Length: 230
Image (tube, rainbow, N blue to C red; front, side, top):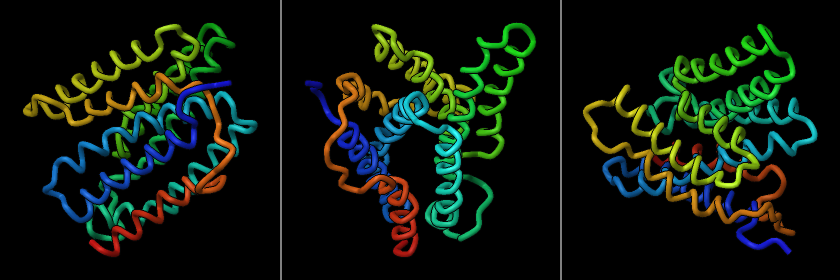
């Protein structure tokens, strides 16, 4: 029998901490601890994206689902973060996850086609990271790279030691490049989610409290609610 938290439990943790973070964004922008709690969410989402990429029956449908809900979430996201319904300055995190899925597909193809085709696939994966920055998606290139990190380290014995170390290195590297005046990156608090991921053993709960697509629907709907009250 598999021990440790179930997939649904960890997804609930991610959704709950994200909701707390977004309460801080929309209603209490000066309350830092709300944003700190929210840093736990994205590493969990990135981890399960990498797991889903390996286990899904149809990666095409997986990508279509991410893009569909990214479109549904964009207006609520813009309203919640920018106080207007259309704001091109930033895009929601589902676009980051969609780019992460595309990047993983490119990295998977690279070893199958050695030589120039392999280099082309790896360049396409790098292009997904660049696109995240150009579109200013939530977490940007950092988020796409974290998805790739979880995917590429699957099966390694000390996976979460490696991922945790690389995660902190990326936090400080991106902070140095983009926000050099701030000594400690807030995203580094996401390391607190890694112990939860380390004890995950692939267990699935017999119950789905939000249904099959509940977590997808939760994303745009909770932002819409917060946007209307902000």
